Length: 270
Ligand SMILES: Nc1ncnc2c1ncn2[C@@H]1O[C@H](COP(=O)(O)OP(=O)(O)O)[C@@H](O)[C@H]1O
Ligand SMILES: [Mg+2]
Image (cartoon, rainbow, N blue to C red):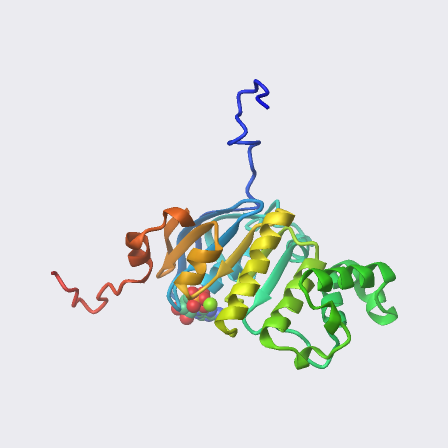
């Protein structure tokens, strides 16, 4: 199958990152620097695990990618937009292009599963459709997505009656309803038992691969990250200290992310 072109099949066409962050700093008013010189690229189709102790800046990094955290330095290109130089209306476009999944699912519990998924189309449908109901096209797509995430049989149930794992699947279907160019999942399995955690991470990984969407997923269980990601980005005290393909991550990398560094000056010299 050799084509004689200079780029071999193992290399493939050049891939452009959907997210490109350079030397990013974030600080809240009158507070300390929360992110300090962070670099991050996310490419189509990859599942990237964001690791770091509590307070290291994982959520803040995700928030900064959708304009919910104050960028004080550096640059951030997200789905084609320069977040430090947005024109009127563009922040809305960025947010419409980024599907988000949260630890607590953030469904409206008294509404049906189907309606929860349909709210993912609100960016698209607009206020008129909110009053008049969603179109048949949207409804069909929502049902297809529920089928894809394996809970079409629950479409008419109230969201609050589902198990945690099922609710997270609804939240993922809702994110897909946006036709996202990027998915950010902040601790999506922190409220789930181990088996459901694996199932939900498998689903996110499959979406990354099949739809060519980058998925950035923060996790606090390292073994889940090692099993379910293509690449690991590790944060510590607001800095990115590890960035490597998952298969190449070793104990030195993990120590750089997690080891206690003796902040009080009592580092064991042994
Ligand atoms: N809205 C905020 N105002 C001030 N400080 C904040 C705010 N949000 C987060 N921080 C601080 O930023 C740091 C990183 O927090 P966070 O991004 O939530 O970490 P992680 O998600 O890794 O646990 C913490 O020290 C936290 O207290
Ligand atoms: Mg967090």
